[in-house]
Length: 497
Image 1 (cartoon, rainbow, N blue to C red):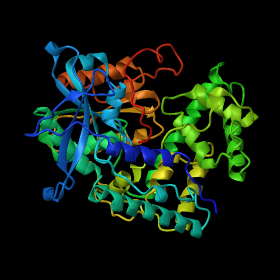
Image 2: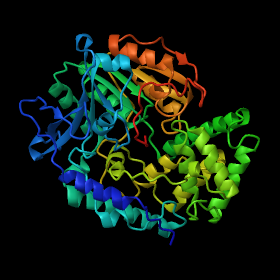
Image 3: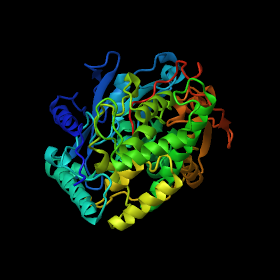
């Protein structure tokens, strides 16, 4: 059996249980928020908002949303509050704001920064799943129909445990419900219209808010967009893998022209393909632990270092794997917790059926054929395979984005994004009539790439509502330059969509 037991699930599940037992600031009455100083974040205030579990049936119980706020630094210049979400799905916006996530000084001067933990996430009422089910052995890349069935059974049991332990909230984590929650937060903040910054999966929240409440939009900046019109598993995986392979070519070109790259002077694609072949044979070892590195883990290492991008670190890791030498900077596995909420949200938002091992294997082989260096987008693969056998139908399945009657929206995207392909932002902008600002550089989350061009355009829009000209492109900032390392907006730590 090729089942893989994730080393970090135990700690994650225990932390989630403990988090649900900690007392949160009380929810306030009359649609306002009873802000209190956050005990764990000096300078931030914490509060809660209570919303229905099922917006279609408000009498069927409520759930609590956790918020964190940092007030505008210049009260005389204050415009209002900007609501923020870091994506995921499963990213905790309140937690990120408490940790220092912020937009530029120009925005924090004029706006209260308000992060929220979406339903089921972080310090909000948690979606909890069974520990035994979460840590059970299961194949991440099935090799035959029996292993495909084992993966489907694993996902089914996890999903059933979430409902058994959490109740109806486990089946109500869809983003359309989150968009309705955002409107309740807007009202509780006393904002007549919503000002919002969402990145990655947070863009889907903003998109669906604009669909549902177009007359309540003030300004939405949607950075690194989801495209909720990807209708098939292959369409989703193909676009994801194509994007990460394209950034790999950018990384290899950077190594060729950059003497400080640890792989400078070596054939980076050839070296990486050799590592992939070794991983497929079970012969690739982590130099520090001596444990085998699977092809999917190697793909995750590559993709994870493209978010920043952190090309220096990736080159060091690949060199260490190729040479078999341990180096402090070349840690292959980061000690980060697994997001156990991901499936409860993603599988509620996407209907991407894969019916058999034969079908899944066709997708895997096709992806590897046009992406010979990375083989597959690890995040896209896990998203699709995580819903095989999931017991609950998608409440919020895909549809083309349709926004009517809202003010113009601003979308941002890096030209080379490893998680939400540039083509997704293009599609979302085209479907909604939004203005798309392109950052001609690399990485995920264009606002945080230290591009004065991107930052100013987004800030001007948030402050005045003025959009950049359609078709505007901002030049890339070379990774590793002084400009790239300059102080600026602090990005969230969420890794995912």
